[in-house]
Length: 202
Image (tube, rainbow, N blue to C red; front, side, top):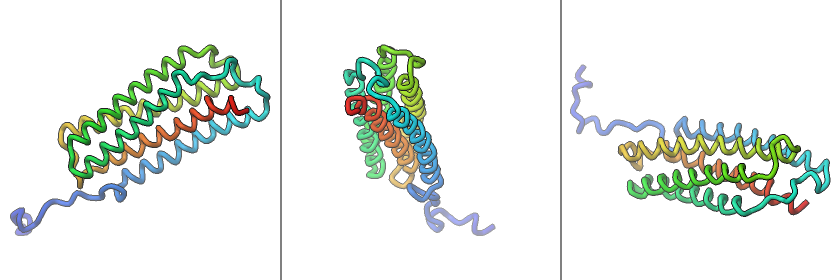
């Protein structure tokens, strides 16, 4: 009973628990990335498997346009840079940098999702018109689902940041969200190279 009555100056600050790469959330997001990365690997393997079975006629005509896809890729990469900058800010104790970085990442992610919907709408083929077409809509749709999850996570981090939940010692959720968002962006680079670049190299 006497221990419970000790004043704060004698007991010291409360522990924050596992932080950064020592917390369960860190290992959880790594497991998530491993499983989702494997799923994308299987889907992309299907694309290349079917591609090597056919000649150039397997690809759509005309070949994929970079008009929307290339700028959209740059937008997503910039969102990843913004999230990295925001994560760096919270570890430096710069709350303004955290808020700005997460806000920019969220805004650019939303722009990417909207442009991707326009990209689908402007496609001159239906998802049932062939193997390439089906895999294109399946894989890019699967990726867009991950973008939607990432946007929800970024929005949550932004709200929590506004409420002052994070500090240099309590910043694990920001790191976890950042790692997931970088994963989503990296997957898109592979998807972009697969569906937009390889048809010109075949």
